[in-house]
Length: 312
Ligand code: ATP
Ligand code: ZN
Image (cartoon, rainbow, N blue to C red; front, side):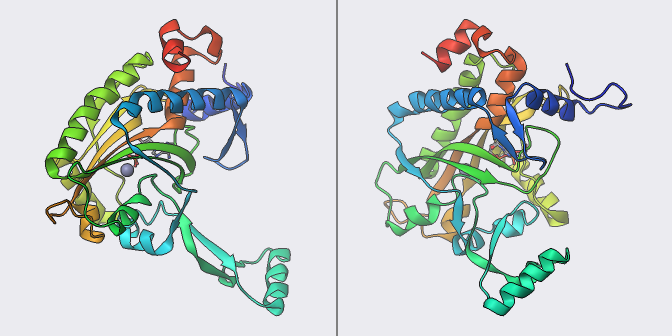
């Protein structure tokens, strides 16, 4: 099945699965690890997953917000993302020079020299997680209503983690429901989603396990942050084997940020207390890849129960 030549002594199963997906016309190679085009068949599943999540969450009456995959540079810096994940961030830089600078730029390109010093940081960066734009926006509205807030948000997200594992993309879609409110409201949301998220992945007939997890914080200080995150049980992942049995892939995450975002932006509940926040995040491409892995590349022959959930 693998498109890798039989003369290769060691075949990495992650790379082999990526080659299979490309050979089958599900993903389209761009020549860059982690950046793929998506075919009609792939997008058919993506759309069905998005619709299935919408049907599941509509009774909760979330407020829908959609943003382009860019974030204000100021909000990004305020969020502290660079403290935890400088290695994953994608910043946007643009040419702002005069005609002489332009000539110099083209000369550098022509001669294969570095031209990045002629680029200036733009007022935007690439969104690292779908929920990032909403916290400063909700904070600017003033105190939360008594029932708090539930937001449905979705975006392409960027993380600089080039990999031959098709599940580790540099740009991918993240669909999230975000709860902002009192500690009780937010913890109830998290408890609820640990059950609902799991049950939903099971309906897709994927082998799923829940585990405590930590974010990939940078450096030595990051190791301590990761330990703290595990100790406080702040992140749970729904894991499905896709490219490896031993290291299953996080397809859905439930994160509890405690008051991290209300320490940065004035998110306050009705009583003026610091709001707590939590999000459930669905990795749309990863769930799509898990479905193709477990049910095959021919959507028409997927199990009836899976098809009924996706195309009712
Ligand atoms: P991992 O532990 O695999 O690096 P993560 O913990 O960093 O993932 P989150 O930050 O919780 O992931 O992101 C939310 C969801 O987005 C994940 O559950 C996953 O489904 C998806 N996701 C994260 N990183 C990637 C990626 N590089 N490519 C595709 N999907 C991703
Ligand atoms: Zn989030």
